[in-house]
Amino acid sequence: MKNPYESSRLLGEYLLFHYGSKEDLMPWMNGPANGVDFALRTVSELIDPTTLGMGTHALDLGCAVGRSTFELASHCSKVKGIDNSSSFVEAANELVDKGSLSYRFREEGDLFKEAVALVPENQRSKVVFEIGDACSLSPSLGYFDVVHAANLLCRLPDPNLLLNRLPDLVKPGGQLLLATPFTWLEEFTARENWLGSGDSEEELTRILSPDFELEEKREMPFVIREHRRKFQYSVAFGTRWRRLQP
Image (cartoon, rainbow, N blue to C red; front, top):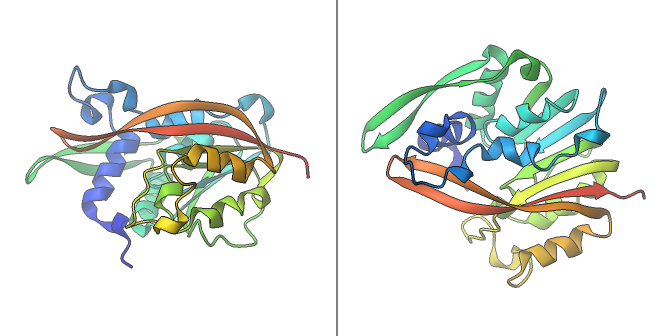
């Protein structure tokens, strides 16, 4: 099946979603400004920095064009971002190499606006990106002090494949940061693989609780701009889990 995230339209939308100014992402005074900076907030609002320090490693699954991966580098010594879109990973790697990336996003019809994504050097030097499938991660990937996955679970063909792998990815005492709006669509996830039978939050807790303790949960709105008069507004369920000692 063709990856829907390989189009130039979505690349522009996601670069704006991750790196765009508040004025570009939500240009309307009365619009939902609480939905901007989502890729940054899923790290800054969920992470517990008090248990992190020198030598800590983080993994960002479904990293898209990398804003959350770079934000993890503000807290950890090394960060790996993994995404299944080659165009997203290529854009993220260019940001690592150059610190900036020009892109354009749609105003309306065939009218576009130019912008530049910027990443500071102190974050770039700690980050690597690679293409990978969150449902089929390499057995040699290793353990991490922080694993982050935002808006990924409900875009996987079988989210249980990732959820069942998480205890082997997060070090004992480490943190799991998850955010998802539970937007189940059969074009991404077969109905039999949706979490729960109407209460995904409850099913997620059931799956994770044998190996993780829930420490934080919050509602996390986000806005994706399609053009200056059309937006997707959603609210993700954000959580921080602590890996229990085996």
